[in-house]
Image 1 (cartoon, one colour):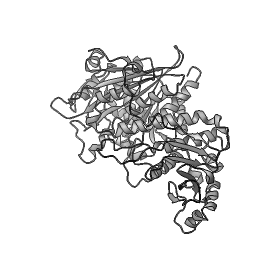
Image 2 (cartoon, helix red, strand yellow):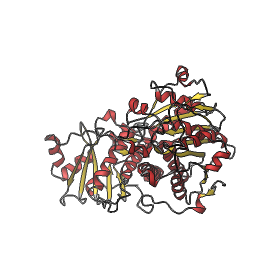
Image 3 (cartoon, one colour):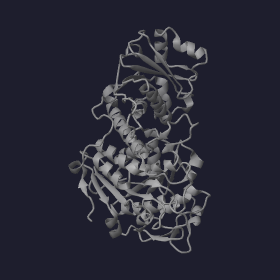
Image 4 (cartoon, helix red, strand yellow):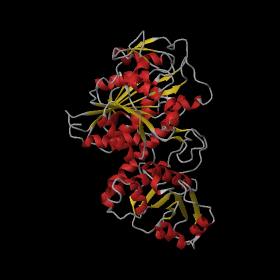
Length: 531
């Protein structure tokens, strides 16, 4: 069967995303005490109210000060207190948002804080919000303390955070709660020309939509998002973007010798696919960034079966692939002048009489052989063929993203993605992109001694190197398939989904990480002279 290559703009129907017709975020010069939106958000650090909060406090007869004096509000990070204004202000609600300690505030925390604020206001049926910053917030989060770039960073983080509150995980309910998204977001309190940050506001809107798309895909029940349905959903999303989508089906995979992906897929009745998508925005002969994402739409562990407790969350094991697909959409929407290809090998990992087994040897499309010692280390196996496909598509630089190892959750929790690489320049770009995106990455070492754990007596490489340094060993496995290309691996097993109930400073459930980092990376990549 031929591959389903197409211009997505010609063949797809529109995908359902947050209101494309909704009002985009904007700046406002209206003071907080005069704002007429449904709600006003003002901030406080642990050491005191912002100037905008003080003005609101005076209009409310000292209500905010009284809460602080009584110990009801201490300004702790993400602490929220919502008051009805009872006609003393034009707005109906005031939300006082705690930002914690000044020295700890960064883009990651600022984005999360305003997502919490948006969640709280949506629960009250608020449809329009004015959020106010001051110089202290800008100085705490910006790249240059107080200049235009710092203001743009802070404004983008606030707008993105509020728009992220539009995510709704209950899409399968027959009687969903009536919680419409916040349609109007105005940001005030910053002394800057509106035109100077308009582009950042447009970026915030697109990035919020992309992030919520990743969260929607990651949260979807696996019976409603099989590999084939994931490819079709991407096809619908790409309508009108000009992105070139190609879906390789089983016969195509066999023709290209993708024995790694096909091997993992053997246990499932759902056919595997490999999704590729191209954005040709840069020079024809220019460098090409490849984004490769793991697309396991459900992971039982295969023959090496996982425990049943918590297995339902394995529907999110395609979070890396989802991030790549949504990032490609955002890159196209923003019209970035860069060449990018997205590659997502997608399958289920199921046990059956046809399933691959511990001890099997698979032949990847690169020709390298893989000894399978654990079928629950399947993500790296399918990525082997994904990375090879990226090289065949002309990649000059590769970033792969995967919910790959439980070791990453143990090491980093849910706050940061693990980063491993073979190239300092590309690593630096990814780190810069993460800061701008309000994501976090933590670099782990790639000392050559770690590679020994993957030596095999029967194949070129084994897929699991033991429990010690599991995240790093997995990266060494992937490095076998990128050859000498500059490469970064992001393990998002912890950062992609916050399942820790007592971690109250990060929103629960799917986070969408690191889709915003990937888009900011493409923006930086476009600026490179010859990369």
